[in-house]
Length: 211
Image (cartoon, rainbow, N blue to C red; front, side, top):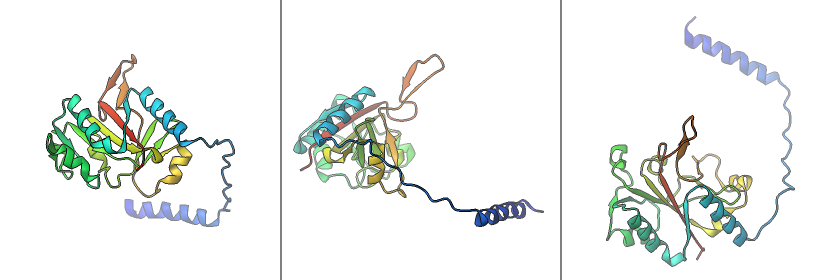
C-alpha cells in the first residue's frame, strides 16, 4: 500500500468514527466578571501597560500625528521609512519631504534597508498593553513589521478595548492577526535580556483622539 493510500485509509477511519460520535453542544462563556470602564480609563491603562513593556508611548492630538511620526523617526536616526498602503495620505505628504519612503511592496532584501515602519492598528488591549494588527489598510503585511528596527504604531483612542475577549470580538476570525506586546525581546538561560532578535528592537506607540 502506498503512503497516499495508507493516509486516506487512516483519515477515512477517523471520519467514520467522527460521523457516529455524539455531538456535545457548546455552552456559552459567561463574562459576568467584566466591568465597563470609561474610555478615558481604558486609554490610560493601555498607555501604562504599553510603557511597562519598555515601549515608548505618547498621546498626541489628531492633527499632530504626522509631525509626531517625523519627530520620532528623526530622534531615532531613521532615514528610510516604509508606510503601508492604506495609511493616511498626510503621513506620506509630511514625511516624504524629509525622509526616503520605501515601496510597501519591497521584497525581504529591500526591507533590510528600512530603518522604520509606520503602521496603524486594528485594536489595542488595555489590560495587557497589547496592540493587534489584522494587516488591513495601513498595517501592511506581517514581514514589514518584523524586519525594520523601529516600529511606530499609531492607534486611535476608540480602538482601545478592555481585555482580550473584547478584542477578539472586534476582529475578523479569518484574517491573519499579529499580537504585539512591547518590542521584540528574548532572554538566554541566564536571563540576560536581548532585544531586536525576532522583530523590532524599538516600539513607539502614538495614541490620538478620534476626529
